[in-house]
Length: 412
Image 1 (cartoon, rainbow, N blue to C red):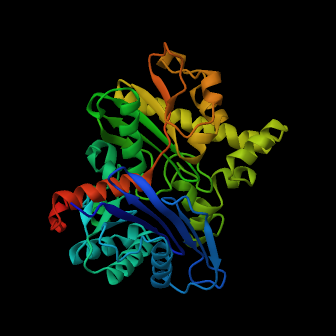
Image 2: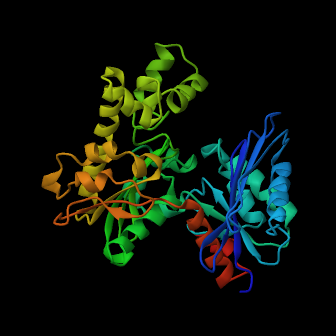
Image 3: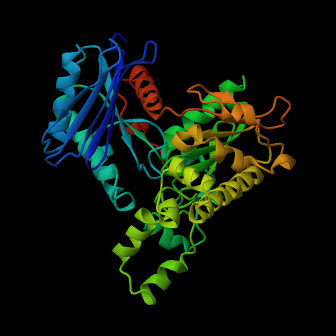
């Protein structure tokens, strides 16, 4: 295939993140972000990496996603990388929710668009924005393959015993209530990269992946396939996050309605935007929380302890699920950069074969690396995630093996 470039688009409700990659060497040609779409203070930041050029920034109203993508195209064109280039093989789109149906990257057609739209009730904050980005890109390059890569796809290998909630089956099926999981592109990339770090094939390795950012999730990966993950029907379930509560007794919601007099919208806002670390101590930046802990701030200390306690629970639970663990790996913003989090999460787990070497853990690096002692029974690693590269890789592989593939790539 002579066309070797893939444009990766991550369309949010008011933003578009993008990267242009050349799949011959998997190198980045340009990266950028358009934010505050629909506001007077919209901003575009674009960095041409292939030429070593300086970052360009511009401000001014960007009324909608169509205008945003046209602005992105104009910036790319300044560097000779425009969307009209014959070297552009495809556009890969991050789509948050694919439900049970989308198990692989999928070339987008009308059937796929309709299914993504049908899933809006279970992803009301994400799928509409993803659809807007897809339709805008289709209008700009209707001749080009557009590929959806789903956050949920990696988790569709979970057995029913892990994916189903213990509620009435007919009710669950009618309303599509089950554990779907998220951050799937990150978990897929990191679990495979961890196997590579260990010098083994993914099929031979059992890994616990801890994706710790403002949103946080854990997964248990057996032989390259996800068998359990912490996020559920929505990204609210699981670990303590920056602003999300994670696991919660469902009766708390009933209590807040009946006793607290709160509306469902108020509770939604509470659990998604005013909980987690923010709710516990007023900060969701782990660097600031650790600074406060070091200064003796008790609220910050309690927030940190609750965060670590939940993390340890999931490490132990997923160890039990897998039976044999070859590696525990930290990734994403907090996982890659917060040495105190890694140290505390693994502390006192020596009976499970887990330990952290203090000197290795303190090293700051953008490279995948082991932070466990050489004689550890189970490896502990830090592997920087690369969701954009994963989306580009899956997109290019799909377009390369079958340019005409479409909804037949969808699996139930």
